[in-house]
Image 1 (cartoon, rainbow, N blue to C red):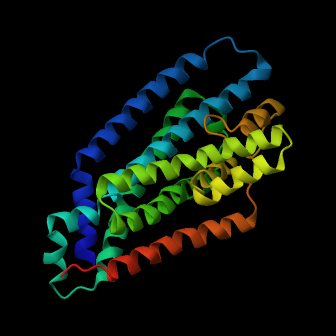
Image 2 (image 1 turned 60 degrees about the vertical axis):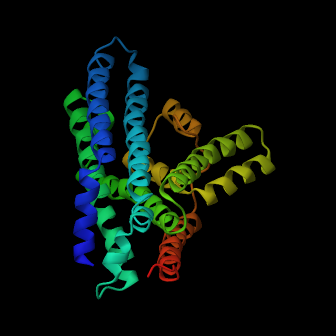
Length: 281
């Protein structure tokens, strides 16, 4: 299993997808730093400084979250499917290795590469925001920085469990398209729930909740954002309620977090079961 984990990590790090996504991340960090440099030196009225800082921070966090989810999907979509298509899995499984170890090795290798990417992106966001004097960043305690980092890793982990299952069931391209669609559903669910609240429509809000159950990844991002920036002014609360760039809704309940945990574990078990029943050799 360790050999598969190392091979998966090394293969993912060498893929053009990882290199391109890394280049996009660096480019965004540069553009975000330039935006902060000029935005925070504008003559902003005192009452709007905190709100502007909040919106600039959510811009960085939301883009980072979406880019990380897309990277996870693109790396994991073909992690098993491509091995099946090329016949590589035949050679691997002809050795004394169980199929569960093969899937777990793939999973751990992908967790390590996505966690490394997420940690670097998260650290650069904080460093650039801190050096620019972004008050939402400079006011963070070590506890909130570490807690935010751990929460920042939860969404790609859940995405990975679902995508790895899809890789045992579908070919690479259809699986990638399907997973991106499911991920987008979570953002749509937040916006639908928000519309339902504004219209006082229980049926519309329920539809938004249903979409969030299918794709709970946006809930995990909102939890990270809420943890990093728990206190907000009236204007900031309005921006948070609107969900920034990708929808919002009511704060999730404890039951929702339990559901997300079951959701991730269930799809990981489905992946193990699906691969164990595949006719490979």
